[in-house]
Image (cartoon, rainbow, N blue to C red; front, side):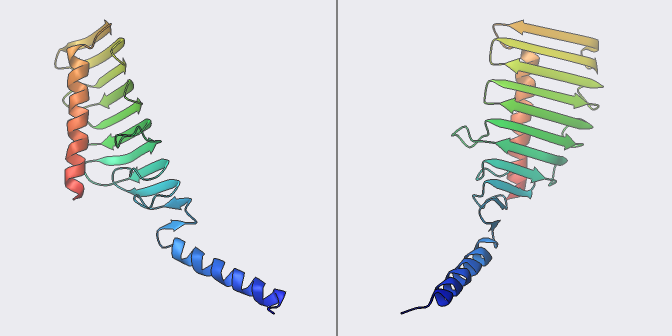
Amino acid sequence: MLSKRRIATAVLFSLLLSTTYASAESLLGIIGDSDSGSLISIGSGDAGSSGTINVGLGGGGGNVLDVGIGSNGSGGSLIGADVDVGGSGALANVGANVGSGIDADVSVGGSRGLVDVNANVGSLVNAGVNVGGPGGLIGVDIGIGGRFNRATIQKKKKEEKKLGKKKNRV
């Protein structure tokens, strides 16, 4: 019959081995790299999609921070944010979304003007403000019940930019 001390030693040894194995990709399944499936995933470049909270730091194309929380079931996040410096036509760009219906995009400097702000709530309410852009000194757009062209163009640019980042990661 095994003594209690030997059983306790065997249990502690097996826990030690399982912790060492788990730490190769994650810390007890709580924090890990971008594709570890951990609760919180942290990686370089774009945020991963395997964790509940995904964080990407740095990477190419001016990416500074990319965060995704939850999953919308089609590879995207329920809540997302992206911060870029330089890169595609702006000195700094910040984008955020909640689901696929609410999004905001802020650009400072570059080809879109000194400041360019766009916000959309589904197709119900859309607003845009541009200072010093190609359309004039100050531009204000408000749409109720449909998207206006500038917001659609900005959203397409944002999607193209994200696709470009993913191509660069290969």
